[in-house]
Amino acid sequence: MEYRIHPKTGDAISVIGIGSGPVSEAPEKEAVAALTYAQAHGVNFVDFATAGAESFRRAGLAFAPVRSEMLYQVHFGANYESGEYGWTTDLETVKRQVDWQLKQLNADYIDFGFIHCLDSAGDWAEYQENGVLDYLLDMKKRGVVRHIGLSSHAPELAQSVLDTGLVEQLMFSINPAYDYQHGEFARGSAGERMALYRRCEAEGVGISVMKPYSGGQLLDARTSPFGKALTPVQCIQYALDKPGVLTVLPGVRNLSDVKQALAWLDAAPEERDYSVLGTFTPRDVTGVCVYCNHCHPCPAGLNIAAINKYYDLAKIGDSMAADHYAKLEKHASDCVGCGHCDRRCPFQVAQSGRMKEIAAYFGK
Picture 1: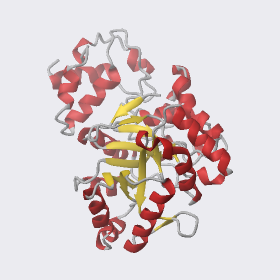
Picture 2: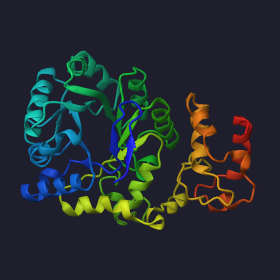
Picture 3: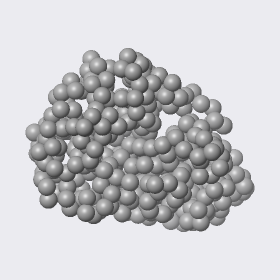
Picture 4: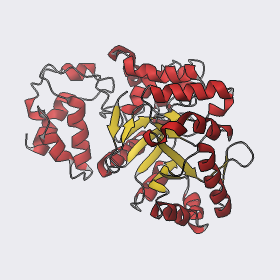
């Protein structure tokens, strides 16, 4: 397993996590075996915005013996009183549900307590007015919640909540369909979505990725908005290449789903390659570096993706980006202008010209 360190919390987070949405669909024994297998293979991060109430008990059976090794996202506003997922901002219901979820998980603390599923300004206002936010913050003050998170599908709303400075973790839907304006949750332009990812990276807010397969649509040519299927490995790599992303949370129901996600760990570079997306990109992404590394290897030894990322972060005010850039082994000024990256870029970025621009900006 590979791990990424959360800039704010210091937690080492597995790049492959678990989305518990479909865990309740499989027979209990099968579901528990799948979760146990995931943990045994290094997965330590689980999200509990799940489809059914049974998911909590099954996760409790699988993870209670190793609770201290796991990191849980629990959502203040997810309601399972009917046995299936529901959304609420009623304070008393939220309190009952958080207490119930902890008991089912056989846990006495929450790593990331989430402001749950806000997609409009009205949702955010209601969440505050009904006292749910105050309850979440009080739970953090008491040590039951260690860190505050936010789940949303809306870049503009997420930006507004980030402005409060409360949020240390953002759960956001990142996949090519949504980023390229295809699907129910394809909110915000490609540029607006990338701006959110860059802001999270700049401010040390970790991103946990939900819906990396776009609900499975991307895995089937018949349902893919691009008319061509991607693999789970390609979808996971796509999300992990985005700024700020710490972990990708595919929904799992059984051992097959877990192994499908873990296949990323042993995948060859050509299996992770999603350059085919370059033929589908919307206008506001064409010509923009998305840090995908498909231009590598550079004949001059430049880490082109990192150079681009630190430049973009520096321009939006990340105070650490220039220092990170300075510590790179080679800089934009070391570009020899061979054009290798220009020819290979699936997103039609004129990288050799961009290296001159970046060298001028940083002075090397």
